Length: 414
Image 1 (cartoon, one colour):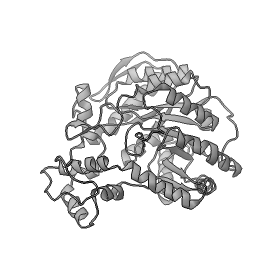
Image 2: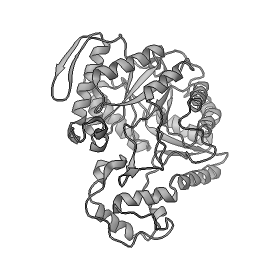
Image 3: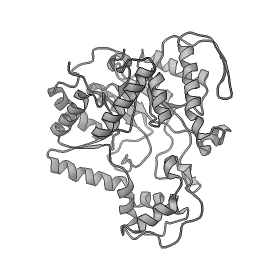
Image 4: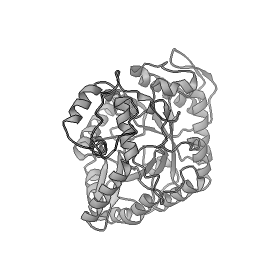
């Protein structure tokens, strides 16, 4: 049996991967942009369109971070509008378990599933940082190590409501008395990669959106997750694994590489590089040349301020040691930012080369597909649909037509 590759698109809305200042980038807040995008994805027989979501505008040193786009509509509202414009593609909303309420979110997600005729998905994420919580009068209320404990209680409650059960649960993390919502439930996606995240996925997820894109890491992750699934009494094939991926295509390998290098430099602009370093120095560095040497002043005391929501837990301490190491590199501010920005999830080459590589991944069961993170809309999507999809179909690893109408059917879930 030849396993089929599943494809989604993950649109984050913020972050350096998006070249949103490019004149060719369609408007982020205009519904027509997303209608056009999901229409192209349906033409390319994609499984799903994912919307990322943040619950607070990102900041840098206490001010709104104006290098990201702000003001996108609520994900569930936006996906409900897209449901009316499409008939096949799955519509996945990223929704947070820390700063939502189980009964309310379960009802809204079930409504999206109803209006889309079974095409809804929920990308389950956790957030523990106080700066987001302040928007909900809950700043710092949940310890980092308890975020998956809260998420598990939240998901169990939502699943019970979707199963038609009355729920009475009263703990310090979940306090719910609710009648059941409409029966049926959205497909559950889970995006965490920590041990707690993997356990949550093994217990409840239908799809995992992992960060393990490199082949060896993908194989190791798939093996670990399937062992966890068996320990929880589930089939090792019960969950689809879709790591995030960026794609850069060219008519030749050399053209694709040149394009990829251009994209990386466009992603890490001078202002972005300065803002990145300001997180470590915690000082105004706007007077420094991004193409010049690192600042010749000492950073402020204290560890990193995570208010932009982009600093991982393991990098919030040890900044002085990290800065000392960077100073030995002898590179400019911008070159430093480029060097330390991970590029592990980028596939670069001709359509045939990328298709060959992806065919190997799916045939070896390293992944079940990829969640593509576009750099440009609509350009990246059109490139993949018009060039990469036919190459995958030629290799027999991608569908040539939809065989179902629901997201669960597209993903061939048990």
